[in-house]
Structures are given as structure tokens and as C-alpha cells.
Length: 220
Ligand code: C5P
Image (tube, rainbow, N blue to C red):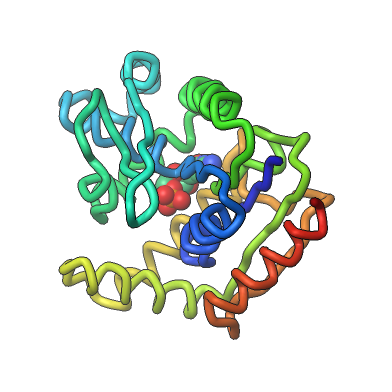
């Protein structure tokens, strides 16, 4: 079974996808982490991220893998646990270069399909999972929420992790990312035609999770 969950930053995708996978007893694939891991490697290597060929070379030679962990997934870059490092605001901001590059996307879409084939049944989340990467999915979900609500959620997550970003800076970063995610030529964020669309602005994460479990159970 393949379930795709796409949507903008802060729509609740990650938590919902992770919890849904656990409830169904199938794997979870966090595709944003592949863009983040390539970005971290590029920053560490010291290349100019705007140099598409250099960034693509990093992506091609980057060994990204996932391991199940108590809180979801451990993200490994060349075997090193980078689960926390890839979530910094700097990596979030700089990941726009990898996301905007058609060449890097091609490498990462292939990686995601390979990982999916190994996993068999899984819940995957990102921006283009239902539209580009797994168009054959059994269930496609698109989660949305008001930008202000999404910024509040992201701000709380960052604060809980010890980061001191202001709410205003998180809101403005979300608006920038939305514009870039929706505007890019390849793999833009868009609602798959055959997706179930859920607006999570006024929902608790548990409610979202229950809805998703019901939708998935109906497939079995
Ligand atoms: O979802 P997350 O915030 O972890 O995504 C990190 C970066 O990767 C963002 O810039 C997002 O636009 C990009 N991304 C993407 N396609 C995906 C998943 C994430 O372009 N399938």
C-alpha cells in the first residue's frame, strides 16, 4: 500500500504521516529529509549552492538512508545521524536551492522511488509525492492550513527544540517557502487531482490522524 501526503510547510504532514504509518504498521518516508541532507552535505563541503552542477554532484554522491527510531525516523548521511542538524533554520532556508534544481530533483526522485521499492508498503510525505514520485499511490492526501496557523505550529516546534526564532521571522519564512514551493517549474507543490484535501487549520493533530486512519482502513 502506498499513501502520499503532500502539503505546505507546517500543515501537519510530518506528524500525521509518521503517526499514520505507525498506526497502520507500515513504513514512513520523509522526502523533505532527502533535500535537507543534500543541503547539509553541500554546506559542509563548502560549495556554492547556487552552482547547480556542483550541487547535483553532491546529490549524486550523497548516501542518504533512514532507520526506524522511537520518535519516527533517524536520518543518516553517510552513516552519520543528522536527524537534528537537518532541521535548523539555516538548512530549511538553504534547501531551496536543491528543491529548485530540476537536476537535483531528478536524483532525489529516483532515490525516493528506490527507497519506496525497498519499503513496499509505506506512507510518504513531501510536495510532489502524489503528483510526480508515486502517481500510482492507493491513497493521496493533500493537507493544508492557514499560513498564520502553520507559522504558529512551526514556531512552537522550533521553540521546543531550543531555537529562538521569532514568530514574525517564522511567518515570513513560511510565506517565502510557499511561494517558492508553488512557483517552481519542476515538482511544484500542487494538489493531486485525485487527492483527498483536508484543511487542518482548526483541527487537532489527533483528529487529522483519525481521518487518515479511516481513509486508509477503507482501502483494506
Ligand atoms: O518538508 P520539509 O520542510 O522538510 O522540506 C525541506 C525542503 O525540501 C523544502 O525546501 C521543500 O520545498 C523541499 N521539498 C521538496 N519536495 C519534497 C519534499 C521537500 O521540494 N518532496
